[in-house]
Image: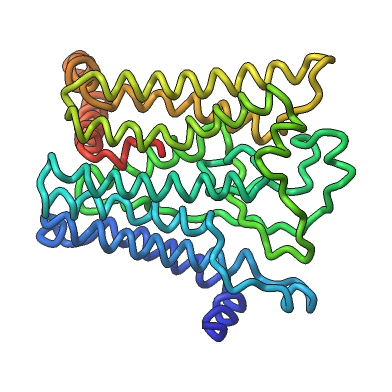
Length: 356
């Protein structure tokens, strides 16, 4: 494994070019192979996971002798979360073909439960800092904007490596659903926040993280609201999947409940953010990246237009009426037809429009 790491780091430019080329080639899988769905999804997931691991190896390259001595053998939780997201669409397709449309939600619920647990652990280990990009990006320890003046004096700067992953999110390159997921992934993961993902390099010094009791005692009531809002954000996908499993996609109850949890959680965090400008409350401060994360989460609300039953009863009809309107226009009509066809295909997969 160490030999592989050294080779990857010595040839990082070639590795990045090759990974990009392989990801693009998955779009040209044979049609007969694509008809199985599981095949293309598995290939895309494997390619995405290899790309993610290679990028992690490159971006955590030790820069000096001391860093080489402290290099950790453990895979960061943020990387585990990214790898799971690479695999989740394959899990959904396999579950649907093995257990059917109704029972696939059991396996999806397990996947979302695992993701929620990982995010809760990351939230705890980070000292209750806001999860950036759903936990795939770790906030810098030396981001003084996110710390109170008292904390800033106690914190030590730590080395950080930044890397951007070419994540496939289990996209299916052999059909229309797969051809659209790159756009949806960019929307869901990169809206507003355009900085690359970052995985912290091994720390040369350990800084003790506060316990929940310590955090709440330091931050007071705003800190309690902040923790509640972040937990709602973390568990919202799991709640939605459980309700979909019980009531089905034709019911409005899962859709409305999920939206309500999103609105409540984001409202709590927004009110907490606004309260930081008060002279009487300097206990909890948000960094610029955390403010951008709140905006990114609001942008994800657009995905509710793609979720049933709203999509079937309203969004799809609007799209089809728009298509009929622009169909006589050369080129524009053709592009609109293909775009709407892709959106309708993408909507059939939960993981394409989950935003989690």
